[in-house]
Amino acid sequence: MTQEKQERRGILLELLQEKQRAYSSQLETFELIANDLISRANESDGSDENRSSFIDRLRREQKRFEARLPMFGHRAVILQKLAAEQVMLLIGQTGSGKSTQLCQYIAEEDTSGTPP
Image (tube, rainbow, N blue to C red; front, top):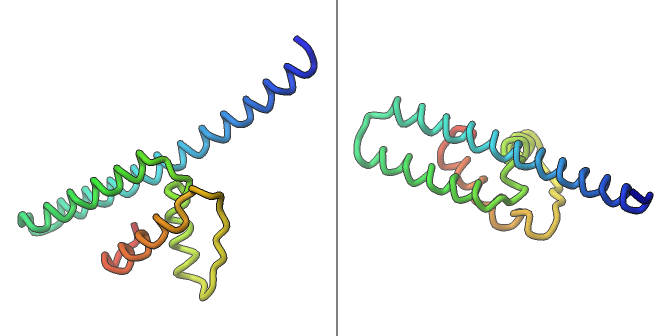
């Protein structure tokens, strides 16, 4: 194998490993949110309205996870830092979910009263 091919192979391997780490982070985030929603649903009064609310929220989270936006995997850390700081500068690539997802995370955090 030539030196150039080895270098390209190394770069591709690094990119794949980075994608794997991002996916693992997103999966971990989804599992934490899903488990929290399930435990809160089990603790609720069992009314159809509450059940429907938890199911709707779980479906939204599932769609976010399936969208594979990088923002999803960093959600908890971003919300924690946002709660602790008066000002926060968030930098991310185009298409990472900064403008579409972050607003929803903040709104849900504010209305649910508990961190996701």
